[in-house]
Length: 420
Figure 1 (cartoon, helix red, strand yellow):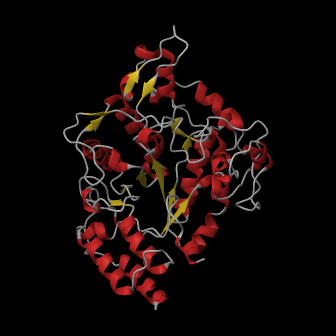
Figure 2 (cartoon, one colour):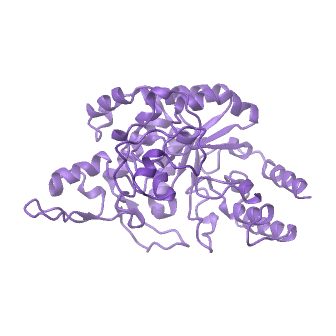
Figure 3 (tube, one colour):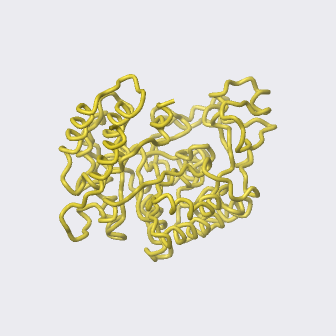
């Protein structure tokens, strides 16, 4: 019975709405037929062992340190096994997870494209592939480059990046990793598979080039207004007084400064305002770089998944939608609004003609998990149907069919695991 219900549910998700001309106010037409496959590249497939991560390109979000005798983790190792370098430092399994790397890369994704096509998927959501030192890569070191360890030449790519002025898009080059990513886009498109990238415009990492400039030049930095700085370091004293706003008080992810605020941030409503204009223009330049490489939209990605979108004011998102749709009208914009609270923010605040084409629809994931798995808060079929109708009813018709419906993500338990 549950199997038949699942088939009917996902068949309903693919039903077309009335034929409408594509425009920037509506979700792209292809979104209603998207069958998504999410890829966390580092954990997907190691297609090129020569680019495996090394400590010099890594950073531990918890301690900043990587063990001196660190080595890559074998793909066949038991998940709960402890690597020799991890056992020596005396930390728990959970403490060492951020240091663990399996070496997945873009070549690995390329190698598996035919496999993915055979599965029947036609859209890929990539977790962050921007250049970043941590495992999760939501702490960007460079927004405008692919992570050096996802490409074939990490050493050469670091040299190219060092020669740029990152604040001037006219100086940006294409690294080997960037070029391999463009090849991945092309090969995916040959197989009628769309690709969207994951970015957090809300914050960067402490190794982000603009933040490093602030550390170096303090009050004289051209980028000091990009962040909320509470105090600069006084070089005369031994203490480091440098203090700033980190996302959710995580200092390794400094938050980009919000401006023109006219309402307060809370967890259940959007808030009005914008973002520092310098940071905003850099974000726009990066966005265009991947949507239209060298000005050619046919070579670019098909949209963006926007991380912690509810932490960014609506004024920015309205401007962002206009900017993106002017470049590529059928680009897909999907926002992540908070999902971990008992009470969830209504999706219609964001899935509408002014903001996003969709949100990650955790509002459906929760009741589906409660019905199909052994979750503690189990519900019956009637309750599931009632929950689904309630969540869909708040959305305008086109947006009901463009939502990103998930059975699991990097932030949630996999439903299949909850059967075990």
